[in-house]
Image (cartoon, rainbow over the protein chains, first blue to last red):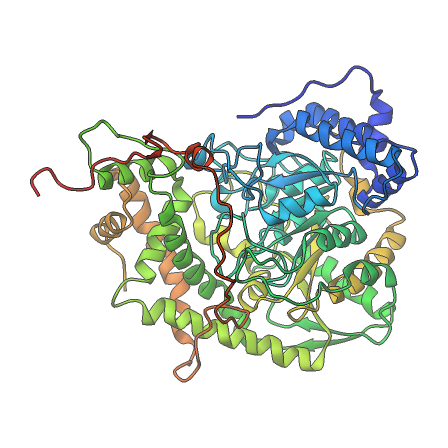
Length: 510
Length: 98
């Protein structure tokens, strides 16, 4: 599966380290100024992957040839005087749940091993149009179900801060690639926290845009009413540049909303939150939260106050029911969506001996092709949707979803943004929760409400707990994604100033 | 409330997934634990609350009914497990006795 390039002999190690540590904005600026070529930036990323990915295992597929060809095209057009976009020539890691021509799409599953999609996801066609360089596909929990990337059929990804620990999930490959300086940018997807939780435990900025803000065309569906693609990056400005590149109405996705993309890049640079009203969610604290997480979160909130924000406590009483509602809604949608993996039109087929009927082949293929968590969720969803249980489970969960949206609406009458810790704990050791699904699900306690209500949310590095990063989550009303970047940009600048450097500078060398 | 091993086997059949005895032994208690955790949604008094199926209010989205180029047959079949005469080849769908 893994196809790693060998390090090029021509690039010195020191030069490579410097280039891969540049932010996306700085990389693009250096390319635009002619100080760095897109090919050099891409080769530096490929060399870094060759050097560290045997340890990290973020990448499932590296497309060195395609990446270098895209980079050469950028360099040629720059030399010809063409005006290029703000991310032209910048390398990116793509979560393997989005289709891209010329690359496999596995979704971390055996059932799609070796499958090549015949079309680009809209996110991918927009990245190509923006001249972003696609390095390849990165690891994930199978079909985006999980919080640790241990549910990948292709083996776990490791956290660059401590390689005995999980990188979060399901976008663990995306987060690990950026934190390990294999790419300055990555695309993840977030159904219950799968961008924000890996961003938090890897010390990155991660954003789930408003539902409907980024096209889902070509995003292999897990839970269609919740899934949303978004950026992971090392800085708020980089995340904003990537968000702006992929967002906007798409006629190919009927749930894409035709409203202007919020001015996220401008908001990231404003750095002034005087008078902004910030609500601390009372329910997202207490039992089950690591004391160190609370300390880091409280310190970040005090920094918001010091920056001139008006901080108040708000109550969202139904948030405590978000996790159970999610684990009924998402598996229900999953059991329906994953019915398409039927061994008939694409992917794996097992047991087709000329005698066995279609249903038997289907059953044997799904048995062999799906991993344990996917099977658990398909069966749970089938149960929740079955006659006699529908009203008590799925129907009731949908009503709770309404109440959670109402809690958000009431809170946003009083405040401009809400904040909470992103996760209850820092990254846990690999293997610690694989046999205890309920314990694993608690990783998404704070992130799920925004998925259920559809609003945007960001995780930003808050600090370290025993040497491991933790995040602060910022939540905004639907289509007010710019507020995340306004608050995130100001808070990032202040926290970096307090510690004298970016948090990721403290990550151990690989 | 509870979920038995037999119920799990039935749900697996409904989901068109074969499961081994070992899997049933593992799945039944796990699903039981998950269900007892999610059953808390029943505590919420929501009798007169409308359900939300989608976060963004949606109406049907139409496009003009105009013919457009589609995927070439060869590309559409390129990822298929088996093909024949430019079509997907599937196992028999009827019982031999029917």
